[in-house]
Amino acid sequence: MSATVLGNGDSGPGDRPPIPEEIAELTDPSNRIDPYPLLNKLRDRSPYSPFDGLVVVGRHAQTSEVLRDPTMSAARDKATISPTARGPRTRNFLHLDPPEHTRYRRLVSGAFARRKMESLAPQIRENATELLRSGAASGTIDVIEDLAYPLPLRMICELLGVPYEDRDRIKDWSAILAESLDPQFGASAGRMTRETARARAAFVGYFRDLVELRRAEPREDLISHLLQAEVDGEQLDDSDILATCVLLLNAGHETTANLIGNAILALLRHPEQYERLRADPTLAAATVEEVLRYDAPVQMTARVARQPGTIGDTELRPGDTILLLIGAANRDPDVYPDPARFDIDRVHGTPHLAFSAGAHFCLGAPLARLEATIALELFGTLMREPRLRPDGVAYKPNLNLRGLARLPVDVDGVGSR
Ligand code: HEM
Image (cartoon, rainbow, N blue to C red; front, side, top):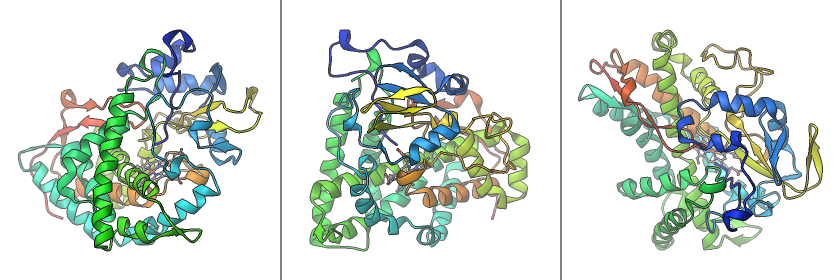
């Protein structure tokens, strides 16, 4: 979810640092189908600095260490390589550091606590059942359009108090913001700037109207809660509320949609594992953990060094951006034996980093885990003889928020629970 801009979109092409081949390759759309050979190479070479201002880290231990290190900042405006290539950002708490970060996070953390999320299980189950039944009615279900995308979107809309009827607009803006989280190098730097700024402004404008409605007539939803919340005895100003709304809505559905899609693709490509899950739906939660490791829905994040230091033998200067390759760390052979093997029975000794670590550990992890677990359980129970249509499978253009655009599956009807 974090934003990473590499290369300098504000300067002329001549000012941009030369982009080493392996880094430029990362952004090549032809690597979306299987980015792991390249990520493995980058991890094995890391830590290293491909050019001034950037340090790449992909080993599990070092990635985890940087994420937990209080001297590393999540505020991208502290970076020497321009974080502004995509235009003005909203000030959401993903990019704040403690103590400010802690205060803002605390305002919403209760609303996403595990116990609270568990109480949503019946509703998630009901929604997922309905989506699967109607999606499969024609004999072919597009797992993304019919299940993986609408399920988390419905739930986060409901929690925030956003009308689900507005989903088409939300979907368009979110897709642009999701793509804008990709690193932007050399020629591609700044490509998304105007489009991103427009989508962000439209999103904020949308929430501004909704906030006014809730101010006039509060409800039992998160927007109304934020309007009443106080930080250090003061109410939040509107721009903080709007930034938090955009963060929660986006983070709350794009990533989980990718998790559900990546999971069903991995299962259908490993029929023996799918069969194990189908025979024993209690394996769904373990399957979700293995998918988070094996094909992380958020592939990378970044931190900015505040102090001089080192990572391994690589020197850090204040303002250096540290690109953290979560997808590579999750396949580090020093931590996971035979890391490229998808194995739902894998015993996870060391936690994967799919939800990050440290102060910014994903706030929505309990919700994402619950939605994906229920989706997998029900897919296994309800879909009769699912068969992947390999020629229809397509990835979204995103590198960072890794997920499918289409996942068509033929089925012989719908079973009963
Ligand atoms: C599979 C689904 C998800 C994945 C893989 C994921 C991943 C992440 C990651 C990697 C971060 C931290 C980035 C960093 O350290 O720089 C993060 C933060 C965050 N996530 Fe998620 N996320 C998911 C679902 C959700 C959901 C459902 C919500 C619902 C609200 C959510 C809300 C947030 C928020 C608010 C933060 C910022 C936390 C902070 O800065 O303190 N995420 N997520």
